[in-house]
View 1 (cartoon, rainbow, N blue to C red):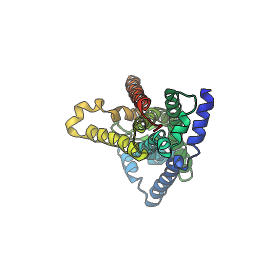
View 2: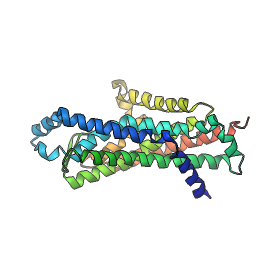
View 3: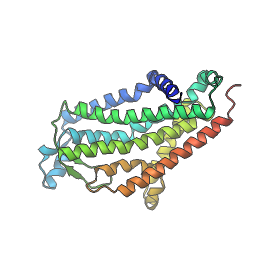
View 4: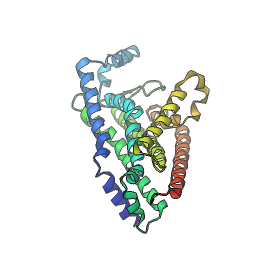
Amino acid sequence: MFYLQLRNELWKLFGKKRTYIGFAMFLLAQNAIIILLRVTHRTQWITRELEMNGFDPKRYITVLTISTVMVTAMAFTLLPLYTALVGGDMVAKEAEDGTLRMILSRPISRLRLILLKWTAGGVFSVVLVFSLGMFGLLFTSFWYPWGDLFSVPGPLPFGTFDAAEGFRCYVMGHLCMVPKAFTVMTLAFMFSCFNMKPAAATILALSVMFISRVMQDMPFFLDYQSYFITYDMDIWREAFAHKIAWWKIGESFSLLAAYNLSFLIIGATVFQMRDVKS
């Protein structure tokens, strides 16, 4: 029964037009970035960096390099936005439309309903992350050749990888990005369980992320970076290191799992006490 109910939730989720806004914006943004890079030749900074370190730029201006540049930018901007948008919609939109009362008139517990919707939101998060990666490779391949990877993932030193190892890093980076999308979705989902509009739930979740990001990047709090939720969300960048710190990835994943569980418990508790039938 849980599978059948989850299938119905997924059917309902992917039947909404606004669910596809994130996918559409990924398509538009990635194509715009690729065309601008190609037309304006703004890959010169990569060329300079490679030449200064004794590498042949022709080997590294490739599908993997440009795709990684795009993914890095969108992982900090568009990905949190559209996972929060869907998470904030899951419960609050049903309450706003009045369909939540009809659903609860059936013999299903509130906790089961919350778990179903949260699981559906998690499926969406996974699909969105891997769509980001696949779209990047697909559209970049129209303009650039396949080859080795040059990566500068944030605070890590730059890395150069052959094509096979670079593709492994690219896939691993997206696997490690799933918990980030899942956490943002769960945070927005928690706010959605409160008595508020879908837009308010989305804005609150993004506000928490924005405040955490700003405080994490402030020089005054450099010694406390690891205490901010966005620090653990950025752990996917470790996948592009030559020597992956698996202990650090495991630590961040454990903390993100605890965040998700806490947000889910708070949301389920609030929803259990809400009067949605009046």
